[in-house]
Image (cartoon, rainbow, N blue to C red; front, side):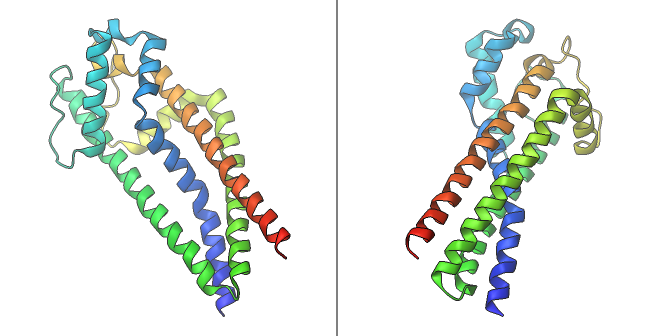
Length: 225
């Protein structure tokens, strides 16, 4: 019975790994101030936003602090944004914090599952083998899925971007005009494309890391037979 539970727990972990890696990459990129600075430089958003580089970077820091850490229903305290933009940012904040909460929960659950794999396994070696197998299959599945995502992103970004917003937001406050709305001037579609691509790249890197760990576990198990 315990062996069956150990196997079931392993398959649950395999199913969770791609989601955890993807959400972890999302968390990583939205916390990377240097990434957004390089994007602002790349697309020269400062003129359209109407701020110096220094002030734009300060605004970006205020913006992401609000999106990630503000737990109230208050609008962002930034006069540069109009009411429509502030309403949209409220929706974005709710979505981002919900995604991060799911990430933390899934990460904690994955640690519990790893512990259960060892508890239910007949021997420690069986537990180690199943954790390695979970990392192997989970990372391979992630690489396949992110490869498909990369292809879709390359050839159909506009449709993905549109559908994402239609599904994620109930109102139409996300329909912004860069000539009027500073939020859109600050984050043109090209930056969203680069952000999605960067998340995909970091997901690949993390997947390869877990794949390498699974190979090391297999090597260790073989060596210590």
